[in-house]
Length: 178
Image (cartoon, rainbow, N blue to C red):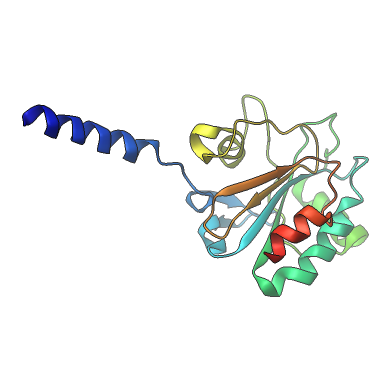
């Protein structure tokens, strides 16, 4: 009987410790320097995208803004994370990035402070997004600017789309609308 109880206890413990996290466990800094806990977005569908203002994909800001305006009232949010990890295509300060996004694309979706999305100094959120043991979805890497992570209303990673998939692609629209 003791062996059965011990076995059940170990099984329960391994189940508890293997539970993946959600994005709601992370606090990030906005581009304006304010701390925001991602639990603020509970119940919403979230697109997390790493951005850069000197990239061939920079024009995706326009589609991101269009998507945000169309679906924000339906519980959809985009979180932009500027990153300088790919060929130094986001060299500006947070203030310069915010001004660029506003002036050139009228960005009103939440923009966060510049982070690293790969390497030894990867941000905790991006470590979560790229590590299956944490996200329960997949091990992956951010391959380039404007990679999109789609997070369900439960805070779990559901899909990853690389830079070539534009924000208004049918697969993304279908996901938002379902």
